[in-house]
Image (tube, rainbow over all chains, first blue to last red; front, top):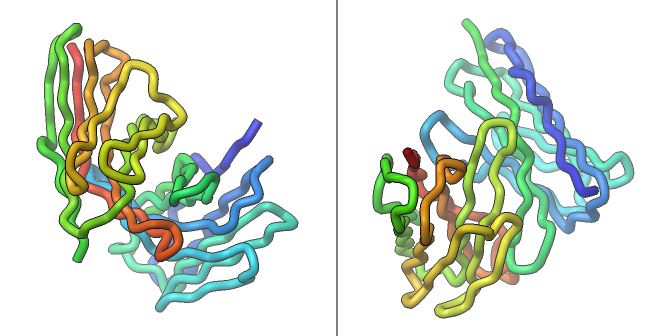
Length: 112
Length: 114
């Protein structure tokens, strides 16, 4: 069956360190993969998109990698701050018309 | 900035009631989506629409219907609410995939069915 896996356990890191979140998938061949941030009680907010022919994408302190052979994306936040604390969702393009399938998300907590 | 609004942040209904959840976007987006989000299950697609009066089933359409009479408005209808429909409901919109692939989400409606 098709599956998208994100680490369900919360990730706690110290301020200033690099946070690395993982998204693994099986039985998909997505044209692209997206990462969203979700704060408690709010809707997800788009962060980054990476296409199947791209290995890496950066935006300020964020970096995403996409390995279609391993079927894995890594999401890095460098120099993390307490304001980065949130749940991060990966989403795969799984059909036409922007149809996305989401992972369950990983909660990140950045501590002082 | 794209703005997606949902009619209520919190809603409490009784079993068997007909429930309407409204979503409005102000950016002339063709695509609109309804998801529900539950702990441990993530976001699951209920229905989506590519254009006015068009709709397609998502992964979990049972117990739901939708209406899109105007481009900016996409309604989710629970014909007869049940307790297992207690959830956070999220609406999203996007331009056609030929232009962009980003979805813009509303703030969500937390529905409780008693």
